[in-house]
Length: 400
View 1: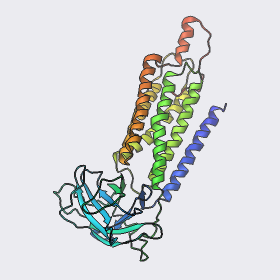
View 2: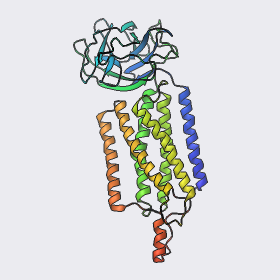
View 3: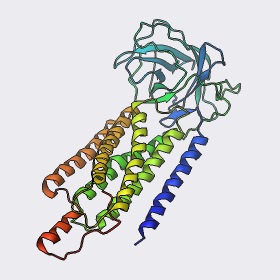
View 4: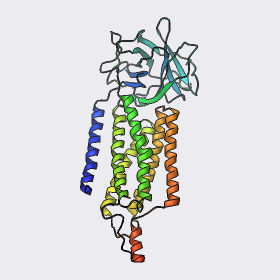
């Protein structure tokens, strides 16, 4: 078995590798965002440094149907730009709509967004591109849903429908999600390519964002819906049932949680187009990541301070327990918030809820049938009975 020093060195090496990946992704991030296998791509900037308008490049690979991008979350108080092609001429049609509830949003009383340029046929990369210009300011301060561009990270939503579409036949979306974006950023100005490709300098028809979000979801879902519960359950209930192996499992889980969380965090931040921590999900996620480092630090400290002859639980152990349970709950909750933010299907949401519910039930059963166990129980047992049984754990193997 590896020594404690070598295992800690492994933990450090995994952590530094994950940080390297994070910095690499951050360095290569760009403003173009694409969703659901390029059903909709979005890139925007202020028209010029002092302009009162913004230029929005909206692209799709859909042959028919409609696409939409909205300023605001989902269908509540969102300023939406819906686009579809005339099925005869191929010309694009733009309709600005204000959404305040579920259902087809009504047309806005002020149609102040215009199509500056568009392609009526797919380019060499398979994209139809539309360049839309809209005012930065809201057209009304009293109309629900009428939204101004803020010049900072702003909650946005996207949706698409693949199927026959006309002005009188706008079916409910079959794909949708949300993201954050600064549509007034002037780092890369949106410009129209005379060849009709329609991508600004530095843009690309491909985006790693959808793949990054999927990997992020897998990393965080596995970590905070499965591994965190398993690690805590092992430390709380299995000390005297699997012997010293409980610590090997607990520490191994901690390393896995560290690596997967840092990797998932780096992927979603590094591909977010420079817009960070503008939603509740992102803010809780940042808190969970920071708290995870504190929790692992507490575990390493407890391991170092472990006394095999102790007769009671020291306060730092109790802090580690309850801080860990709080972190576990926050992580599980934030995974569910992530499903909501990025528009996961109901099947995935129900599956995730079922896994977390099963973990909660396991804790309830463990508390009632197994009960929490402590390393000092065996010391007290030896003093009371004169037994010479060896401790299930030894110095340097206590993290909780």
